[in-house]
Length: 177
Image 1 (cartoon, rainbow, N blue to C red):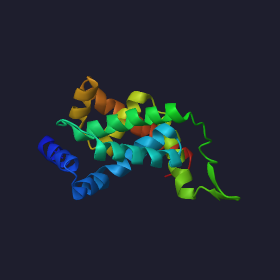
Image 2: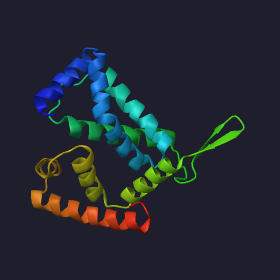
Image 3: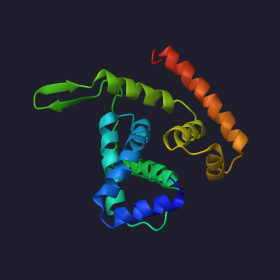
């Protein structure tokens, strides 16, 4: 989505167009969830973060946004850090359960696998992880990432390839692929 389309979408959202908000949700909710799971290492908290980000987008007042993907990534990261600070939660990633009355609902295998993937992503250096997220989740080009991070395009490519190699090895070790 180019800058003009991004600004039009954000303007439509700020004007209260539910269809524009649905469009935004369809484009970004999974990306926001990926970042939130990585940062919180907890599926339930990540769902809360998605809701917080979506609420901020719906009710927020924003001037023009040059890079909507970058804006969403930074907003998600900032709001997640606030959420973690405010809630001070420390949950076990693989044994998270939620009590409903006297029953305990265990997290599904799919969510456990997602949390394991988030844990593996969490083992990457911050710069590696940010580049992978921006390239894979937000479809930023190596050039856009380089400009945003103020490093060369070749460095971004090199770091991305190293990160993918590390992830592939970890995924194989954990029987994910």
